[in-house]
Image (cartoon, rainbow, N blue to C red):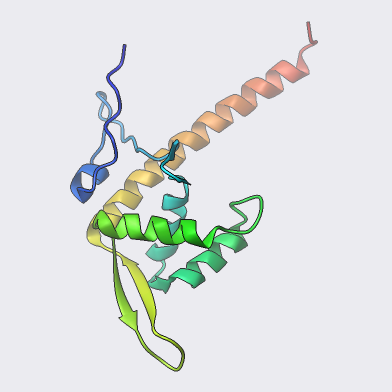
Length: 145
């Protein structure tokens, strides 16, 4: 019987260094947690890796990626940003310009480390999907019982 997974931590260092007993990076990210899905976290983070952005710009980018079946939940994006900032993975500053003041978000050093962990998770998920697809195609090509 395996030990239960640790609950999400607000300690950025713990988030970025979660590894299984074999030393393979793992992440807390694929199950729903609270009222929102943690899988949105890596998408928000990878968008911020391209440079600082405000919330609605992130929402627009997520919509362009088509990561949801409908419109992107703006509240969910801001909850993810707040959680990331609380964990020390993102920082924000208020900026003013010709329009209303807005909050710009950017990744911290700990955020880049956590994004590296997410990349490892995504690569492993990609491998697993490939395995599934290969076995599915093998099964479909064979006569059904």
